[in-house]
Every structure is written in structure tokens, then in C-alpha cells.
Image (tube, rainbow, N blue to C red; front, top):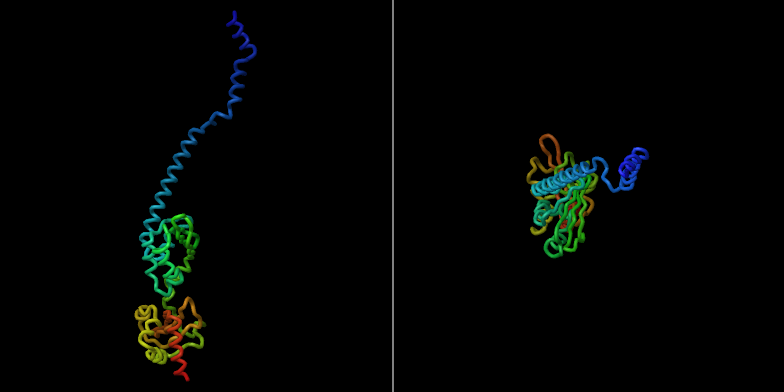
Length: 264
């Protein structure tokens, strides 16, 4: 009779369905949504693929940096947001590819010597940014002790600042009023003590590579980082080119005195 009453009441009042429904409603927030387990598995798979992709990209960037033969090559291989550890010896090798006068625009040799061989430098990070790179010198306590920001154009100016320019000295305002014939210039130069002459041309190879005849030489009217730029105008069979080299300020000053004496 008891069983019959329970069965009859269930058909009449649906109390069992209501009880189960109330239980499911009360515990709904603690149960997974439809497909949540599948979604979690998919997210895990995607995360693993992303991590593997990051590791692969980082390794590719590291190898590209190792193959870079210049700072411009380094900048072209790192995308914005990518970063790699640049070995001390690798940075030094890239730095030594620069001419002495242009290397000063990046960092002074004495400062670099202290960072690499005297300070608490632990590692060097190179980060790709939009239009260039950032180089961080990190000490053993994870502090940035030196930071160098380089735009790609700055790097090109540093590495290619002494490439020939088509035209003549008259077209370059910085040489106005200080342009001399080649004969007068070299006559004044050879009257200087022999130990001064090397400091007038930090990169004579740039001049020796050129063909044609030197017509005139100009002396720049500004001093930058202890150097003064000299412009040598080469006359070729078709056009003229100006080749730039840098001389130490004090040596160029001595040369200018000789040129003034000849004018007087």
C-alpha cells in the first residue's frame, strides 16, 4: 500500500521531477557548461602550440642575431617585441666593425671597456622596436646600467656616414667658406709633423678606394664628438663625388693654421 501511494502521488504531483529539478538548479553554478571540457582541452592545445611557436621564434631570432655582421643587420632581423640575449663578445665584435669616429656615436670606447670588463655587467638584452632596436646592459641584480636606443636611420648614419655623395663641395652648406684646392690643402698638410697627419684621416681607406682626381678639399664648420669632417671632391670621367672622412679637432686646427699662413 505504501509503494502504491508513493507511485500514485508521483503521477499526481510530479514531486520527484520537481525535487530533481530543484537540486539541479541549486547546483547549476558548480557544474561545467556544455562543451566546457572540450573547450578546455582545445585551449590547452592552443597554449602548447603558442609556446612552441614562441620557442621556435626565439631560437630563430637568436640564430639570426648570431649571423648578423652589423648593427643594421641586427635591427633588420628583430621584429618589434622580439628580444634576444646578445653575448658580450658578439656585441664587441659588432662594435669593432665600426670606424673609430663613428663608433663614438654609439658608445665611448672607455665606457664600453668598463661595462664589459670592469663593471658588474651580467648580460646584454637586445629588443626589437618599431623602426629600430634597444640594447640593455643588465647587471647581476637585474638593474639596467646602460641603455642604447637606436633607430634604423641612426644605425645607417653610423655605419654609412662616410660613403661618397654625388655632387661637389659647393652644394654642401657645411663647407661654405672653407673649401681649398687640393694642391693648397696637401701642401699645408705635408708641412705638419708626421705624427699629426694620421689623426687628420681616421679612415683613409675610404679615400684610397676612390678613382679619379681630387680637385678640392673642404673643412666642415662644426665639431662633433671631438672630430671635424673633411670632404674630398673627386672628379671622375662623368661626374663628381664627395668622400667624407673625419679628423681629430686638434689636428684639423693645426692644419687650418697652415692654410691661413699660406693665404696670408
